[in-house]
Length: 300
Image (cartoon, rainbow, N blue to C red):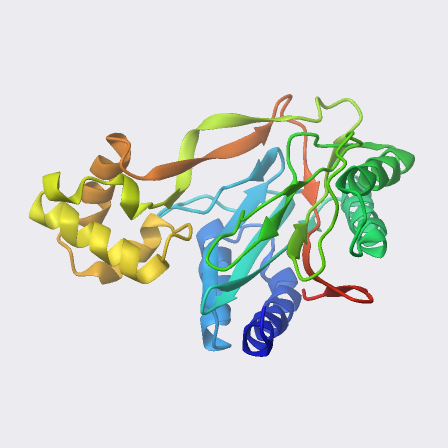
C-alpha cells in the first residue's frame, strides 16, 4: 500500500478504536440488540467512517454473524455473554475489531482468556511468522486458562473492499507452513468456550447478513424493481456485507420483500448465523494489525 492508502487504513483504525471503547457502555440487560447495532453504526458514520459490515451482536452460544434484522425485538438477557463485532472502512480500506461483555461473573473468565490469547498472538506477528505458530499460541493460551478454542472459526487477511481477502489465521495448532507477509493486514480473533463444549460452530437456519456479487447475477433477466435494488446494493456497499436494515434508503418499493425474494432465489450470498454446536457460551476478542518492518502495528 502507498502512503495515502496507509493513512486511510490508520484513520479507519482510529475510528474503530474510539467506537469500540464506547461500545462497552451500550451492553446492558434489557437493551434491544438492534439499538446496540444501530448505535455502533451511527457512531462509525459520525466519526467519518463507513461500516465495513453490519454490526454483529451475538449472545451466549451465538458465536458470529448475527446482526438484528429490521424490527428485531431481541434484548440482552440476564447474565448474558455479548459479543459486539464491528468493522470500519474508508474508501475500502478496512479494519475489523470485536469485544465481549459479560454480565455474568461466572462467564467473565471466558472473556479474559480470549483477550489474553489475542495479546499472545499479536506479540508473535511479524513478517515470516508461521500461521501454524500463531494458532498454536492461541490454543495453548486458551487451554492454559482452562477453556477450549473454537477450532473452525479463524482470523483472516483483509484487502481493499474484501473483508476476507486472503489467508485464514487459525485459532488452533495446525501444520500450516504459510507465513505472515510484510505489508499485509490481518484480523486476529480468538474464540473461547468451556471445556465441556464441542469447540466447534455450526450453521443455524437463520441468515441476517448478506453480500452481493453483481458478476454472478444475470441482470438482464431481472425485473425492473429487482434491478434497481441490485444497483443500489452494488453502488452502496461495493461487494461488502450488508444488512436488510440498510435497504430502506434505496427508494425501491418494499425493499425487504424484494430482497427476500432475491435471497430465496440464491442471487445474493447469505451468511448463516453460527452457533456453538453444544449450545455453550462463546467469547471473542479481535483486533486488526498491519505488518511492518518492526513487527506489527495494532490498528484497533
